[in-house]
View 1 (cartoon, one colour):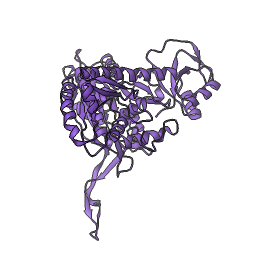
View 2: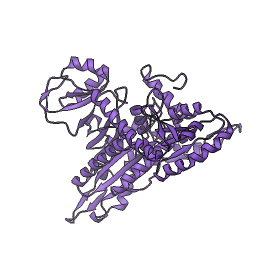
View 3: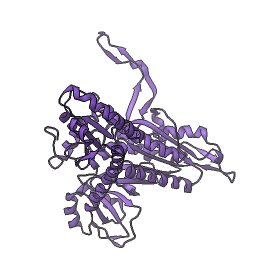
View 4: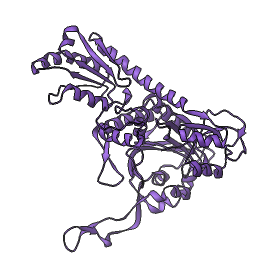
Length: 490
């Protein structure tokens, strides 16, 4: 374990902050509330990007790019939408600087004031739907299935790297459809894509559901979400997919001639995930020894470290290692042979353990004699001596075992920390323990807001698979027909 590295049980928040920095994922920038994503952290994000991008394209979507700047008047066209983001918007008012009178610095040129102020993109519905108006005339132009990989600015006051920053990276899908049924099906389909990615690539179990009206995306008719449980028992919204109805089409007058030769407004969806997934990845799997990565997202899946006492022993080890490296690469496994002479093996072991490399091989002179190597897996820290014969096959098998094992461990943790609660007194006790609480709720925004005010817990979602069940609201005692998930969240 790294020196002075805080344990999760001592201070979970500080553990997270330290891990992000010490694992070389990111660091705070000179701009308040913004972060620098370092090469190792960005390599993980690239793997997420590539996997998701393929999934989007496999479901018929294409990438496009829309402007960073949005005319302020566009936001005011959809009242509910702007209400949701107004307090977080960064505004551009001028387009030029000039040297001050003393010649010692620069100031804003008052003569370069914009005729209309521009908003730095907090989300792109408005700029995209103003564009779609030019693209859509007939039902033959539909559907439009676009995705954008971009950065977003939301001027957050309290920030934490990856989880909540003033600028972050994400993707946002924006689709246009001829019918309500097509749009609703699209929103649900993309939620399934996100859940598939979270569980099978990130090894993070999620619950699919719909948001309550109070938690719904501003401007949407329905917001579907995936919710994950972190190791401290808090919930993290890992992805959302919104059925927007015809709200944005009406705001920007986007009509089309339907098959009945009548003008109608287009139906819309939007959906997105962000670098917040990096936070989910860290807080689902990592431990007191540092980062733990599922093999499918690890920039380095296997590292090989030579063990030697004198420099003349290294060439023989390197010669033996090269065929192993070639065999691993042939299987599509990313491998690094760390033969740097300026660092000792123990230092390398600590570095790769802290960075979450799934499998480590160590080979020394005695291993050469015996035809063996030491194999250490990051998830369990278990060490075994294995034959070099067929070692590539064994590493490949380990990758599958680690991927499945991390997912199952997270599933078991969630199950152990999910409880049914049927009274207000029990709710007050159980919410302090963290986890997901399955409770009855009377369906009103007033009750939901009161519970949040009293406990800081929110309705994370109404699960898609929640069975019909008669009961009484935990706060008001009014009738309820199914349970919802309450939790404190990030």
